[in-house]
Length: 174
Image 1 (cartoon, rainbow, N blue to C red):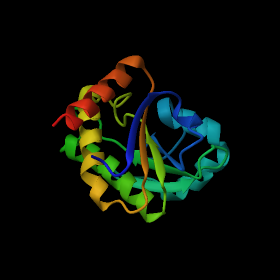
Image 2: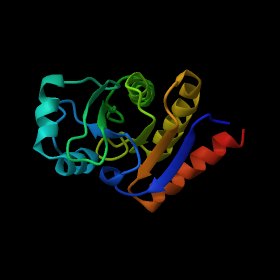
Image 3: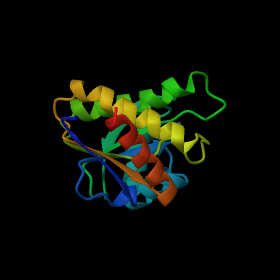
Image 4: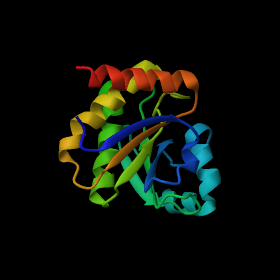
């Protein structure tokens, strides 16, 4: 069993008041956009993008960290997920997103983090694969985490929520 709590819930990632960091499913230039990136940038305000500009561009699988600005979170960790069907080694790159975000969180003493379903939206990754890769990566990384106490997956739809719950119960049942 995991030394940290893993939660799966339906909600808005920009309103996770009880976590220290939220993860942005970013674009390479860390610009405001649609989906998760748009929601986080709108809620955080323009200072988030000002802080992001010198960190861009990032590559698929890479993660960078900024302050949370007007979000209820101290930090935002930005990850560029792979585009399904376009990026070479896409499953590995998707796993790298979750792994690198967790490593950054732990390096910064972050005790709780909320993830979206990275690459499942505009990047076209099937949510079933995203859920499996995300859950497996989080569980593999648990032994290396010194500070992290809670990992949350915040999903935008009932379908995605159920897919992540199924993936988590499938792994816990082994």
